[in-house]
Amino acid sequence: MSDTQTFLLDPQSATPSRAVFRIEAGRKFHTRKLRLCNFGLSNSSGNSLSGGDQIYFGHKGVYSLISKISVNSLEGVEIDRLQGLGLEMMAIRLAQLPNSTEFSVGRQLSQQMCNSVFTPSFSQTTLTETAKKDDATLMGDSLYIDVSSMLTYLQSRRVADEGLILQIEWTDAATLGYQFSFTKPPVLAVDYILNDDIKVDDADEFGFISIVDDRILLTTDAIERRLQSYYNQYIRNLYYFNIGRSNNTLRLPLSRPNERLELTVGGRKILPLNGIDTDSKKLHFLNDMSGKTNITHYSSYIDGVLGLKGLWNPNLGLDYSSPSTLGASAGAVFAWGVVRIEQLIGQEIVIQYSSDLAQGGQGGATTANCDTLVTLAEVTKSYNKRTGLIRYIGVV
Image (cartoon, rainbow, N blue to C red):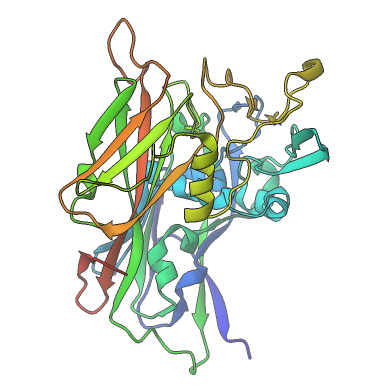
């Protein structure tokens, strides 16, 4: 006899902008296997970034459909959430898949902007993305979103029986660049446990890492700013990336010429020497502190030779190697950075960031002519399922 039985739950309520799923209490289920599935998409606006009625996602893949996702207790306590620019964590996690997975299984399941490369020769690197192929509308009603991979509280659990409420807000057309509709609405797949030998998690309280995002408008070439969003919280990693200016529709994380970052906590510099001041050092920290990634800071040597394009995405019209992709001096894409902090923040955490790209213009500093620096902190929290209390903790 199988240990599990999979149920497909329809949403308790659903609108074009929101869906709510409810798992009732009393039955044991696997928290690490919750997923949205059996749904498909249609480009109802009749156009896309590449033209036509196809749907091609950016670096967050199918997770680009979601603007906020949260898991709540049946009493209405919000336990964990991922929203807004915090969803960039899904792009980072997708970029950390092996190259072969990015090309095949990952591309099909996650529908992310192709992150895999071929190397036809020692001097040439090309993207595996093929024009007019594998857009989301061709997946039929078999699209898939791994809910448990988005919410670390669900990963910190193993087996639960107290029930939960899952709330999802869908992204609007202005962010995606096209109007989409579901050809078939998503259902929530839940694996209920039939084996009596598999017990519910013993503990009442569970520690997990939640993502807290913040943003800074760069009104000058160099800034020094207190990050007040992170006071009195224990931070593991602090990610940062530049989303450029208003013409960066996909909010690609960019690198800037001679970019430099330093971080001070409690009057002590976290980073030695000159901080993170080169692309190689930025990639080194990302690979060591977070995980190896594909393509980040990468360009093809063939770019510009005989009119050929190097890392060219024909479906999104993006040249990963060219600084003119998103306007003058846009730089390479996929330029995430990370600093390992691993300590409790008191009342002082200061970020220093600079580059050689001028900010503002004759009309003054606005969102249209200044870059935006985004930070994502891995903050430790805990939830007590018996009392329903959420608290920030010093260690997990």
